[in-house]
Structures are given as structure tokens and as C-alpha cells.
Image (cartoon, rainbow, N blue to C red; front, side, top):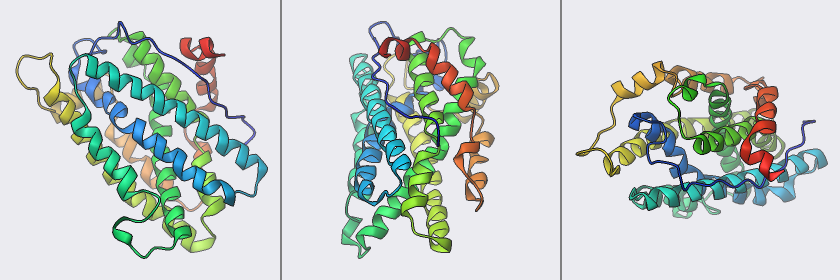
Amino acid sequence: MSHQIAPRRVTFDWSRTPLHWIPGEPTATHVINVLHLLLPTGERWFVKVFKEALPLVQDPELLAQVKGFMGQEATHSVQHTHVLDHLAAQRLDTAGFTQYVELLFERLLGERPPLNAPVPAREWLRFRLSVVAAVEQFTAVLGDWVLAADGLDGPAPDEVMLDLLRWHGAEEVEHRAVAFDLYQHCGGTGTPRYTRRIAGMAVTAPVMLYLWVWGTAYLMRHDPQPAGRQRYSFKEHQKAVRRGLLPAWGALGAAVPRYLRRSYHPSREGSLSRAVAYLKQSPAARAAS
């Protein structure tokens, strides 16, 4: 963990960003826009869970990395919230979806187990740390994808949105191992720790898939621009994948069995050098430095 992690206090100007920021590609636009539905609440929740775990961290280097992670995630949450405000200003109201995201993170995965389930506080914290680590597996994969996705440059997408996504993706690759390392540090030892890691992914993977499909369908249905209501189409999704506008399902699915190996560590995910290189050239990151 020699790479220092620190938040970059970036800002973005959304005044000229169109609703369909990938021109002529409403499906690809809204599949990616689901990030803005999930991340403001989700990343605030990451920070809350990590705050609970801070007193358990005995390693000074890990503690510094965790605090850097928390600063980055808090900044991500704020910037994606601004995108939700921008969508609302363009008559795409997302509250009908985000209320359920808030229910998931703040009630079902809150500080206390749902329905007053008799789960010890330490075990509940460990489970939630395993969920964060599992989510971060996917964000690292997505972050590396968006940094390498030359197909996204072809349709002349909005440069501000693309910078947001690549800045965020680069920081996800940059801190790809922190949540995993924190879980390993606080999650006990041996088979119980590994079993809980599996359970975290077993919950996370299907819930993320469900939320992503549901979120895309919601955005397509409420998009004010197309004539008539649009529906999410798997066929159109696959066309966007073939054009390099979206990651392949197989690439995302393959992240799961890698994560389930006992010997796995997220430092093997993505290219840190590519992430650092982008952070040096990102307009927003450079303006914040």
C-alpha cells in the first residue's frame, strides 16, 4: 500500500451538458447514468461504515489509506449529487428511484440490523464491510474500463461528463484495495472471515445487477426528450456494448469468480499506472491541484 490516497476537491460545470451526453445514444447514456442514482447515497454509506470501523484499525498505514478513501468517496458522493440536480433541471426527476436506494443503504444496511435482528454489533459491522469490499470490486473493474474505453470518445460525448467518469474511475482504481484490506484487517481470521467475504459478494452481485437494470429502465421511462415513452432494451444495450460504449456483461461477471479465490487481492485489478496518468491530465483534477 505504498501509493498515497488523498481526495481531490474537484468541481464540474454542468451548464452545457445535454441530457443525452452521448449523442444519439439514450440507452448507453442512461445505463451509465445509473451511477448517479446509486453513488450519492451509496458512497455516503461507505463513509459511515468506515467511520464505525476506524477504532478497530491498528495499522497506521492502513488507517491513513482508509482516511484517504473516505475523503475520496465523500467527494464522489457530492459530485454525483450535483449531476442529479442537473438531471432534475432538465426535467428528469430521479426521486422516485433514489428513495429506494436510500431505503437500502440507510435502513436495510444501516448502523443496526433490520427488524432488530439479533446480530452482534461487531458481526454486523464486519458483514457491511464485506459488502463495501464487494462493491469496490465492481467499481475498480468499471473504473479501469472507462479509462480504457476508446469507444466512448468516438461519438463526441460531453467532455465534462466524460471527465467526471474518468476522474472517478481513476480514483476507484487508485483505492481499489482499501476496502478489501480494511475488511481483512477487521473481519476476523480463517474460514469465518473468508465465508463472510463470500456472503458479501453473494448479496452484492445480484442486488447491483437488479438495481442497474431497474435504474436504466426508470431513466428511459422518465426521459422527457424522446417522443413517447422509451423502454430499456437488452438488444440496444448489446449494440452499445459492441460499439464500445458500455462494458461487456462477461467482463463484469468475471470479476466475481476472481474475487472468490482465497488468494485474491484487488491490487491485481486494473492498471494503477493508467489511473495515475489520467489523474495528471484530468481537467477537473488539474484545476483542483
